[in-house]
Length: 408
Image 1 (cartoon, one colour):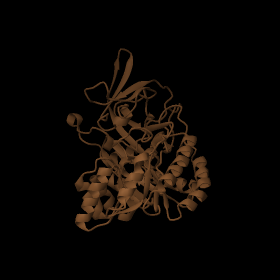
Image 2: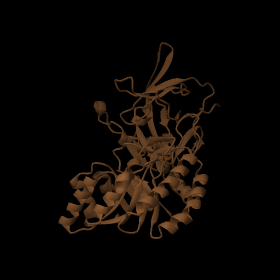
Image 3: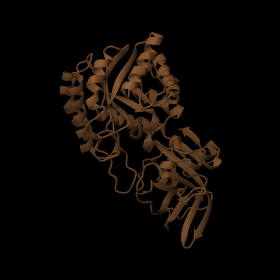
Image 4: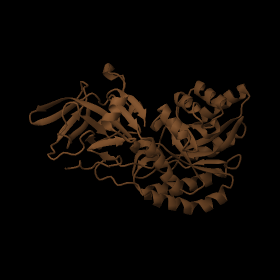
């Protein structure tokens, strides 16, 4: 039997079938009522959080960035595993407030918050991460009109970036946060407003697999916070250090060395506690917590050969998993790990291209991959699909039904 290459076997394989949440893929498909669907393994999520707890210093608080996967059942699960939430819309706020997470442990990040969103956040008693001077003034007017004293962080656009990151969120001109050099004047103005200053949110990038880059960013984050704290109206009580922890997607990707990051952060904490004696220190993660715990499953509807190339046409596609198609930020398209979930291994492996049923050549889930043994009715599984999957996809394109989502 030949196992597919470049497949991170995070899920067990029993009787040549992938098992998700203790169920075989065919059993799970029958239970759901068909394909396509996303499935998220709650046990794997719990183990990932436990690994982080063990690796990080004990006084580091762990927050979940809901944008990675806002499925209500999954967010409810996370409420019992992490110390807080970060959200980026009124819709995510509604999901968060339906969980057991206390509002004071929830923060609202993102540029362009509307007055209705600021008002909802203030009324809910959550922390607002201010992205600009204008947003600060608008929130102050809303707080004054309602008699509330809303808790705020300043989101900082740092003067450095997270090197080797998939998405750089700081270091140059950015729509996110306040440029570090503008913060002192903003803090001076904040003293006069009916807002309760807690501290800083400093996020420099995401999806890095380089421990050294994350360690450097954490050092720089603490140094920047020290410089800015000299201008703060009150002592720092909350310091969000960002995240940036990546997961492997593509051939050649190496897993992040979590222990090295934890050990380095532990070495930074004595000085950080001395300089910020009242602060709570937060690491905020999304993809790293849930990305590897999810799969996207579609069924082969047709198998055809075109000029010598085998195509597997499925009932899924880019409208449900844009990232796997390569159209969610990839400059040069690379394949997500993909396999035939109900017949993982096969003696005679040949390559095939996996596509959806949309009328566009962009609708490719896997290009020239060793899944050519799949037949009509087989189940194609895209791994690493627990983050930025369904809600990051153009589900209305061509009007196909939305896929199911289950937490198992």
